[in-house]
Image 1 (cartoon, one colour):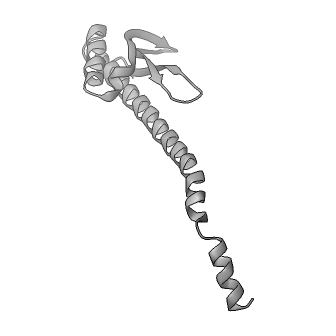
Image 2 (cartoon, helix red, strand yellow):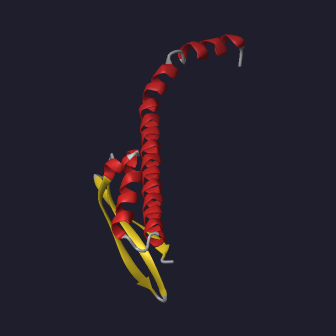
Image 3 (cartoon, helix red, strand yellow):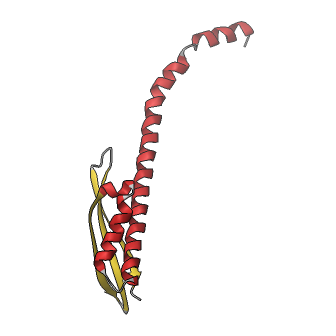
Length: 130
C-alpha cells in the first residue's frame, strides 16, 4: 500500500469514533446501571440477613424474649438504607430435630428496575436456644 492511499483511507474514516461512541455509550450505561442495581440488592439482602441473625441471637441470650428480638432487628434496620424495604418482622421459637432455636423472619420488598417490578424476599435468621 502506498503512503498516498493510506492517507486517503484515514481521511475517509474521520468522524467514525464519535458515531461509534454514540452507539456504544447507551449500552455501557445500561450495563453499569444493572450492575449497580444488583450490588444494591445484594447489599440489602446481606444487611437484612445479618440483622435477622442478630435479632435471633438476642432472643437466645435473653431467655427467649421474642419482642426484644424483633425490636433489636428493627433498630438495626432503621439506621440503614435496607430498612426502607422492610415489610414485616416476626420472631418465633422453632424446633428442628432435637434442636430448639429462635427464628427471626424479615419480609422485604425490593424495588427493582427493568423487567422485574417490586420483588418480595423472605429472609430468616436462626440462633440456637441456650
